[in-house]
Amino acid sequence: MTRIAICGACGKMGRFINDVIKERNDCEVTAGIDKFGSAYDSFEVVKTPGEMKEKPDVIIDFSHPSALGELLSYALENNVPLVLATTGYNEQELAEIHKAAEQVPVFFTFNMTLGINLMAELAKTAAKVLGGQYDIEIIEKHHNQKIDAPSGTAIMLADAINSVLEPKYTYVYDRHSVRAKRTKTEIGMHAIRGGTIVGEHEILFAGRDEVISLKHEAHSKQVFAVGAVNAAVFLSGKEAGLYDMSDLLAEV
Image (cartoon, rainbow, N blue to C red; front, side, top):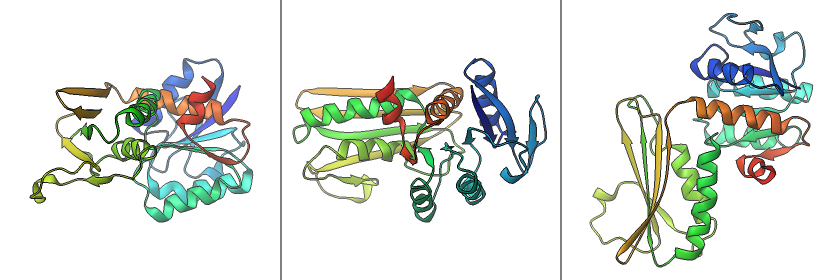
């Protein structure tokens, strides 16, 4: 039984994670961490990790990048694995995550769904076969409240594709400002924001007289919660290191 603490427990994603865990028999919630909420289920909600009465096996963070410092300090002092599902980290924070992973297990990815990460693996296979002959474009759609563009997931997909290409491709985000024909060694990135779209990502491999498309649609934020809980159960008992969905998929 994996004992999980949820950071951001009172937010929408925290409640989704709690709902997912309640439906499983291989894990349980032992505590919630939330500076702006209070208890709403059988577990206690505290304001900081240090206030938890018992050490969890894993902490899932679905809160805000500002919580990272406290979480890393607690994890390092108590040897507790972390599943970091929050987005929007800056370069310094990403460096801190990588450094912490030298001492404790850390699971970090830009997208927690199994589907997106499988899509990334499929895109790598397609790029190995089609690279150099097909133009590659990535289109991502999100709700009108999302701040960053392109999404971290779109960049993750582009990086996955680029990892198998030689020479490496460049990313073009703003095509209307470039008055020139498309080059062969670029990946176009397009961001759409509107309504309540949870998340859609499509990769186009456009060749002569044919187009191959890989597409993923998230119809509910609960898919991210399912992925985060799967990651927590996977991470429990692992050695120190930085893990992502490719590691989890390798065990499926």
